Amino acid sequence: MAKGSSSYTDFNTLIGQLNNNQISPVYLLHGDEYYFLDQLLTKIEEVALDQATASFNHHVFYGKDVAVENIVNTARRFPMMAEKQLVVFKEAQYCKSPEAIIPYLESPAGSTVLVWYHPGKKLPMNRKLGMAMKKHAVIFNADPVSDREVFQVVQQYIHEKGYDIEPKSLHLLSENSGYKFSTMVSELEKVFSNLDVGNKIRVEHIEKFVGINKSFNIFSLQKALAQKKKNQVVEIVHYFTSNIHDYPVVMLNASLFSYFRKIAMVQSMGKNTDKEVIAATGIPYFAIGEYREAARNYGGKKIVEVMGYISDCDLKFKGITQQNKNPQTLFEETILKIVSI
Image (cartoon, rainbow, N blue to C red; front, top):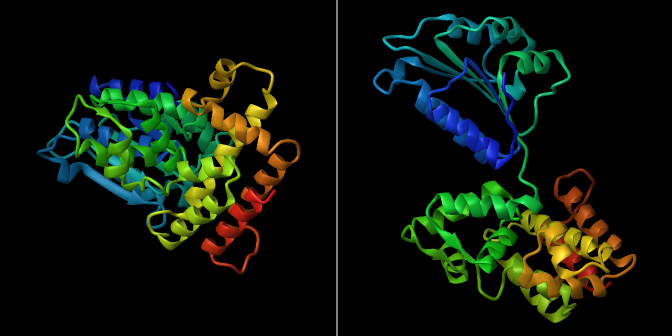
């Protein structure tokens, strides 16, 4: 059967198939990009179920709570007063005996739609269950949208919603969201609910409706770091750590990692034209001067040290390496190390 991918194009293709009532007996939805997974599950529910009888024919199980045999027994039943029933196995990554579903995959009930919902990580496709899914299920791999693709994907999403967006607005939204597609979509919902369809989304809309401070945001921090303006960097970071609920340091750190990774790419393309660098990195045209300045200020081994500081901070946030400091202090120290190089 067809195998999906995390690209927005393939996501829309699968949504289109469901809109045309092309529904398969088994789906595997897995990976990290929760927006894609949630939207696909919602669409499958909409197409597979008759709303008048949905309460009888919508069965949801959870990986920690149920044996696979119970799922199979439910899937083998006939729907009540409807053409199809939907069986959703959420948190399937916690299932203790997942391979028990394989005999059902080999001969699924024609009146049942089974969704094996495995978010957060991928089902290993080189093991028995993964190989069986390849043969018998429609698979969607919800990989995160890459930094390089996220501008194009989000811009397409915005246009499909009936809006346009300024390049600077998109850049600010991306930086503030850590280039994470699901987060950007969530933030855009705030804008859509306050702005009529057909409008162009401007910087002031992002600042107002998403709640980004004009002076203290990830965009201004990165620019201050690029220019090595230590006093300004300290002021911005102090504001962030004093308003920690609005500025999660884990997300800020992820944004900085993405930012400096692009700076490293600019360094490696030092002899290329701006146009070539923009095409290779996805840096917006209006920011290329800032990135080139940062590439000069963090030349040589400095950029390697910066990436090391940010990675070390991330490992400590996640508890992978030991640390006895709170996240705010750890982040402040990391930024000071960077700007002092």
